[in-house]
Length: 441
Image (tube, rainbow, N blue to C red; front, side, top):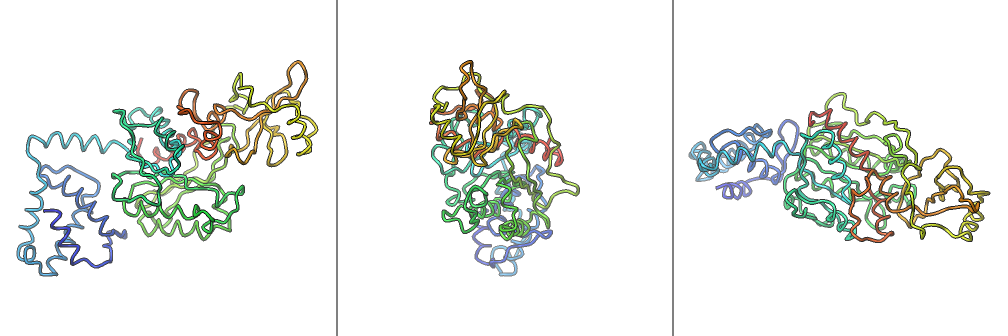
C-alpha cells in the first residue's frame, strides 16, 4: 500500500521540496520520515516518536497532491484511503509488545555513522563517554573508509555486541545514502592535507580531490538528516584563504535545516586536555534545527601535569635508535650543538629545535619525518636519539596499553594511522561536554 502511495505521489510531485517550520524536505527524505511515521504511529497503539507532527504534515501534503491531481482512487474518499494505509501497517496483536519494547530500546541508543573512520576515533571516544555514563548507549550502524589498512585496523577493533562485523560502506564518494541504516550522528574528519600548513594548501583545488570530500558529508546528511554532525579538520581551514569553503559549508548546513548559525566550532589542543601532544585541531558540531542558546563547544581544560616522558616505553625496541653517525648527521643538518638532556624530550625536526617544555609536537604521518625522541645518555655518555615507537604514538593519541589490536600491521602503516587519527581522549571529553548540554546524558 505504501509503495503504491509513493508511486502515485511521485507521478504528481514537482521537483520542489516541501517546507515545514522553515526546513525543506526532499522527496526521498519525506519517504523515510513518512514510512517511519506510519510504522510507529499508525499501527493502532500510538507509539510516540519525535517526528509525529512532521509525519502527519507530510501525509496530509501527499494526499492533498493526489486530490488536486484528481486521483481516481484517493480523490473521492481521502479518509477511507488514509484508513486503508494505516491498516496496512497494523501489526498482529501478538507482535505489538515486542515491537514497542524494541522501539523504546532503540530510542535510548545513539546510532552512529563514522565517515573517514580510520581506526575508529569516534568509536573509541564514545566508549570513553560510556565509561563515565554507564546508562549511555551507542550503536555503530556502519562506517566509511577506503584505505585497506585503516579498514583492517577498524575491523580488528570494532564490531557489534554479538561479534558480527560492522559494515564498511567504502569510498565515501561512492556511498549511496539510502543504503545506510538511519543514524543519529555523523562523525568524520575529512582529509586535512588540502588545508594544512604542512601541505600545499590548495583547498578545494587539491590535485587529488581531497579538498572537496566534505561535500560528500553534506550529500549524505542531506538525505539521512541526522540529529547531529561532528566534523574535524586542521585549524588551517579557518584561515582567510579558505573562508569561501568554510562559509559554503555553513551555508549548506543552514539550507539543510541545521539553523541560521549552524556550526559551533573551536580549535582545541590535545595538550590542554591531558595528553602532552601539541595537536591543534578544528572541531565542528551541528544540530538539526539549530543549536540551543548559550551552547559552548569548548570543554573545560584538564590539568594533570603529565609530560611526554610519562608516555614513553620503559624498554623501546633497539631498532628505533639512531646510530652515532646518524646523530652526527642530524646535528650538522639542523645546526644542533648537543642532544644531551636530563629528561626525555622531543626534537622538532621540522622547526629544528628541542622542545624544552616537555611536550610532544604533533604526531604526523611517517613520511613527514617530523619528530625524534631524545633520551638522557647512558653511562658511556653517548647521545641517544630515536624514533617514537608505535605504542608511544597511540598512547599520545589517547589509547591505553592493550586497547588496540594492531592487526600485525607494519610500523609505517600504523604510524600513518596514528598521524591521521583522532585523539580519542579529547573526543571523549568533547562528546561528553556536548551531550551533557544537549540532555543526551
